[in-house]
Length: 262
Image (cartoon, rainbow, N blue to C red; front, side, top):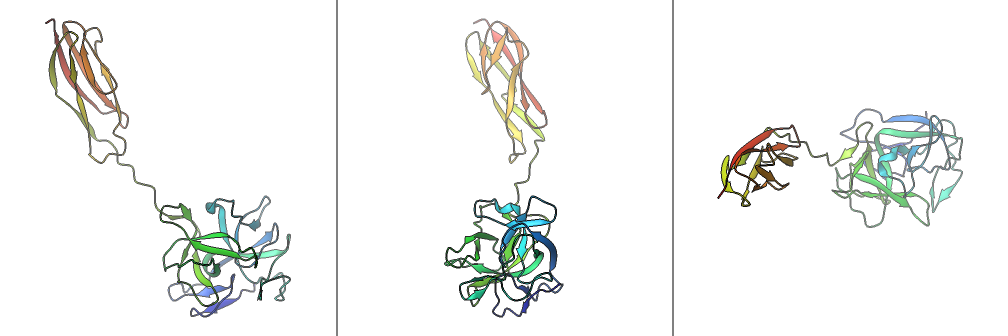
């Protein structure tokens, strides 16, 4: 399989593989069938048939990207069939063979004004209206996930090197779930007269539990009722147990309420 490899951060073109000091092994490149016109440096997504890929479009979700089109491949010539601007594009027509870098460093074109740093998450932004080349930029910190990150800042020729990652998406991880371990109700006992109210407060442990919600119930609504916020109302003389049950884990805590007639 032919691949164009540039080394030591020298001037490269979109779709050329790179050799980085921190990435010594060869890039993982898979041979696919082009499901449409693909340019070197294009982000690509899976096509509608087996082992086919098509160019990612700016209307697509970035998580659909499965790799980046390499600049040359064994089943089509080194002579470019199309060009963008003054730079050879090495475009591939539909049904031709296309190499896809699924894991490894590769050059991409930067969108004007983008200033990536090593480690920034990389995303395609869309095609340049004049050159037709896919342009890349930095994913905002809260912008989601991607399969690529920058390993250089901007280089000569308006390009940068990204590291395409095979496997899990990169990005801000989902917040870990902190499970509820217990609950308390204050006060633990209360006395109210008929028609009077008593506010109960539920506290969930730990304090940073992900879901602190729960439900209030009364053991005897003919003696005392409780609403969704823990407000107890005396109904008739007697005793009722008010229970708070956590949504997460079903932990319970109670308050014994005594209702007096006057």
